[in-house]
Image (cartoon, rainbow, N blue to C red; front, side, top):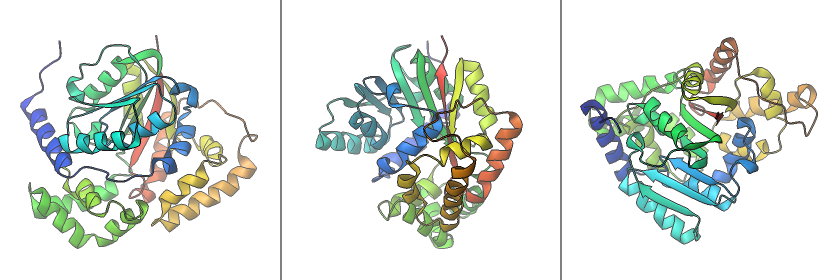
Length: 328
């Protein structure tokens, strides 16, 4: 039987769901730009989701769910509590004719989906807004079949710190009023807004302000912590985005999918220049072209070093993703 949520968690849930229902995020995202390279770095292949049962936990407006539906998943199920986001997701599903995709209103902390059902389950940028992310992750693993893939994406406690300072200023000035926080964010940090606006090609200008400065609650997490979650729930590490071992970067920047992902660095010229330099370096130091190396579990030292490398690029890269396989 599911444990009842504490009053504190219920309050967090109510305010977060309310904000994202009124200000759904994102309204527009080109998933084709980012998914190819991201999945290569995670060690995910088409065989993991094509013809399979896929779950999107915290689906929001449904871009990722419909990407998997388009790419050949047998059935994609998206769950979320935000009525506003689900309305947009359903409208897009119908417009796109995605009969192999469905959206359902459901609490991800009290997820009632069956055990060991999905072949491929993921939660991207959601659990850190719940107040109890480990509880949500345990559900994500529970409903995945043994041998199935689990993918989770969370705000990083290293790289998110830079943005957290700006957010704290807005919270100090705006208090609990979300609209006032957004007002101060736009007024004081116009440069931040312009950079992020370019990243989304000018398609989510107002929505960015609410997602960055108006959110009611978030938690920050490290790669070491999530590896601990994997150990608790019987998940074997498969890969990370960005990579958590230096040698895995050479593999990542050899991949042709980077060329498409490069468009997401619009507004971040220094990061783009560093990434392009890594492409040239990987041509000399990477594995033989076409080789798909295993991604061994990173050591503590490797995790810390790589996360420190992310800090200078924290505005663009403040969320990290890890993939694993459920043992069984």
